[in-house]
Length: 395
Ligand SMILES: Cc1cc2nc3c(=O)[nH]c(=O)nc-3n(C[C@H](O)[C@H](O)[C@H](O)COP(=O)(O)O)c2cc1C
Image (cartoon, rainbow, N blue to C red; front, side, top):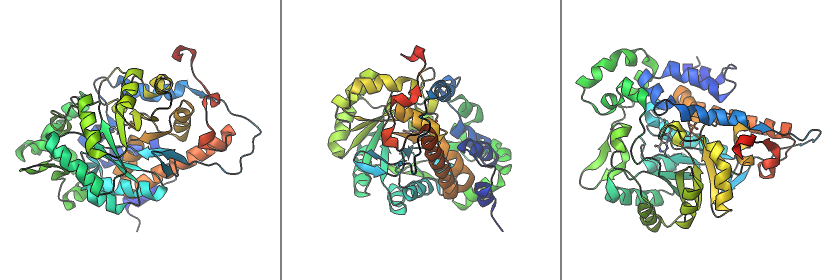
């Protein structure tokens, strides 16, 4: 008999990656779903990220027959089969026990890259060994510089191709859903503090059985504090409490790492130029999926300004609100080399582990292929601003 997860993945009703969202809501306890789905404060930026894609329209070339579309792109000298990477998503192991390993495997199998969050429930060595890669490591300086130094060394030894340093988390954003749900108690509280969560956990027996069989998610194994060992599981606000990154830290990180460095969380031309000056090879135009400073612009909206400012000195990636192949096409037309997808694959992960991520990637791949055919453009490399209309108010 087919498992519930396999049935969910095979269902003809899963047509777009958005279809995984209600399925994830049914699968996860409320607190975990809201952590994945939610944004900061009034969630204005979360909504704006999506709305911006609706404001940009496509300009197809008709009567162009393209036998086969080429979806490849190059990022940091690596050839990727697809113009999207899987974004770092903290606590993925809470969504599914295979968490980060499953996501990395699915990305590798599809010929694209996976970015492993510092806030991971699986050891970075296991993630790297499980996938055919390439994998990038996303760094937070949680636990202080000494812990970060050890992490950077481990990431190099484990074969990570690039270091992605996230700079938009001087403190954690005010994710109101997490406060209302009591995420801090669920993640870091005593056993007694977890008792009120029992009804919502028992209401999701499939998730609970997986979680208990996995032994819970006891620690954050990639944050090892010298003299103390692995950091125990804590909520995101506590984790980010002393993890602010300044430009001087970036120089220090760069010198330690010596490989390609990507700076994630850029929203202005000024910071993009600064990142290039500091020697970043790439930047991610990102507002953390609307989870940090609410009220900042949609990332698609600020992309053109940043592309114009850096003048090709760094590669530009972007993320925020990508749910369809046409979203990816629009971002590339406006100057991104590739995009990162966060929730688009994480909903699939929550529903069916690796199979769910594979399906989400496949949906985006076929979306992309169809969109290029309909646009009359043979390749991702051939996309440019002539394929989109941008509202006059953006100029
Ligand atoms: C549940 C969740 C956890 C995240 N954890 C991290 C993280 O640990 N590090 C990081 O740099 N970004 C993190 N992000 C932000 C993503 O990397 C990415 O910027 C964002 O999800 C893009 O928006 P999208 O979800 O609309 O695709 C997280 C996002 C989500 C949804």
